[in-house]
Length: 241
Image 1 (cartoon, rainbow, N blue to C red):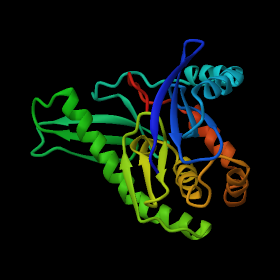
Image 2 (spheres, helix red, strand yellow):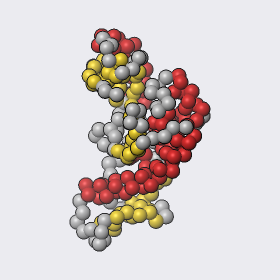
Image 3 (cartoon, helix red, strand yellow):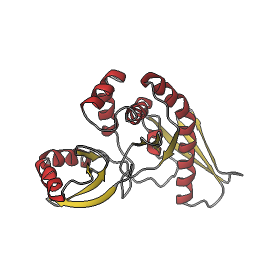
Image 4 (cartoon, rainbow, N blue to C red):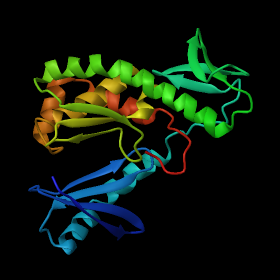
């Protein structure tokens, strides 16, 4: 599905407008930074889109305020004693320098980061990030298959990606889903909620009443898990995801 992006400014709030092959307008405020996204039918007049966004301004401001109030992790410098998370659990980072190769493992309540001598902070971050990617890729096949069977759909492909505005994404035509790398740090049920959310889009493209009914059917407590995910501290970054 082709899209065209424009940016509107409404009361000093930027709204990303995507024109799509859809029938109705859909508005969302995305964690963690509260970026506003509005999808509209391709031929909708820009002034109609603007008026729609203005009519939702109170709702938009409320959600932006909630996301800005969400706790943020302190900036990590990847030294021993820092707290890091995996599957919702807190671990203490132990950096072990002078190792013959760079790698990561978990030992009890510690994440051990083995690095060669004089490895930079940026390199330590990359090593740990790729470890998270590996762990998530090991977890996902079983969970994706589980929810495919529950829903009665099948993906052609899934992938892990560090995304700036979404926890997940779905290309309906290609039957492909993306999962945000940061979900490796969150409780597994939150990861499952995102997998379900994206798979349900293979049955219903839009976030409409049918979509909500399907979510209610497959995961009755999905709102609780969504709210839990959005309450958890998010990564310290300048851009959000």
